[in-house]
Length: 210
Image 1 (cartoon, helix red, strand yellow):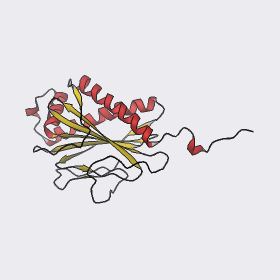
Image 2 (cartoon, helix red, strand yellow; image 1 turned 120 degrees about the horizontal axis):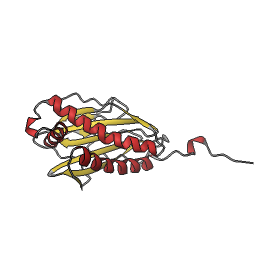
Image 3 (cartoon, one colour; image 1 turned 180 degrees about the vertical axis):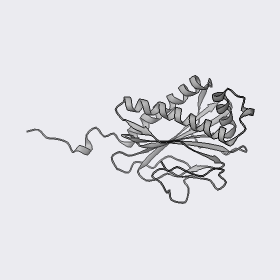
Image 4 (cartoon, helix red, strand yellow; image 1 turned 90 degrees about the vertical axis):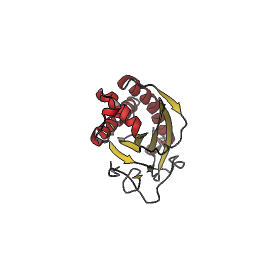
């Protein structure tokens, strides 16, 4: 007589397992994308929230849905975003003068970093699809955690510029994982299935509806 395990227990990874895999791939993706696409070398920094700066902050958020569900937030100061956009367009950072140019460039960076991760998750047997990127600019931005997710902060430096990637991964088992390690939760409830970005002085709509 052959016994079988419940379907829900077969080959279903925990959120912690998925988070570790996404962290590993994200760190590799950042180095690969910055080196090959932008010709910028990056180094690890303290895994801490991005500090506010006088020039403002910019966040690009890209979600993925499928066998792995979550969202990746790329968080940087506006000066670094100008450097990145300039490298993409073959311009000096002083030539990156419009909000549209800056937002489009940083959104494309999010697509490249998370697309690299998505491709390799699929290769590991966890297929998923990406959402369109959402870009927010302002200062003192924060990400609100939600139940049944776990998160991690990854710190980097590009030259003198710090930047941070914040990961949030949903639990495929529907269980409640350890609290998400996402800083500065906003006091108001999220209105979408992913964390809300909040900032009282945001310059663009706070849109994270994936």
